[in-house]
Length: 172
Image (cartoon, rainbow, N blue to C red):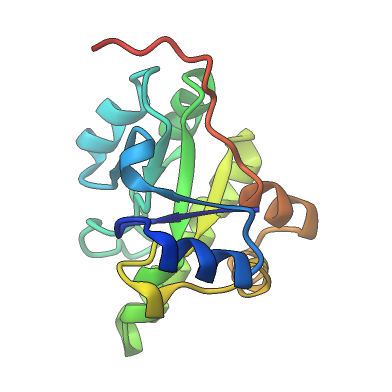
């Protein structure tokens, strides 16, 4: 199982990752990864074939509408992500650091994004996305988190075992 973190990966992070049940800990610098933004930024990002992961598209979403949540992802963006081999990332650290109503909103938006990804067949990545050692969580905790936001057991395992496509042609 693989975990993606935002902090620099040193020996302490690697050893903690091994203790928590991960075979490899990857930093954001190793991937072509961007955090979600407005819907236009998300569209530009998933339409580029060189990118690997759109992380937490629900974060910069504005107010929810009356009849649905504005989660930063829709069917069109999910289809673009499938066609361009871009995975949708769901980081646990944002849920961990949020409190009260904001945590409930983030979880609801993540659940909606999971449903859209399941419907379209988009790859999903669940990771701790930790800023520091204390925010790292074990593989079983992340599996439980994936089940909480609506993934089946097999989908949760696939999302933790996701590997970037190293055969992508990168332009420099």
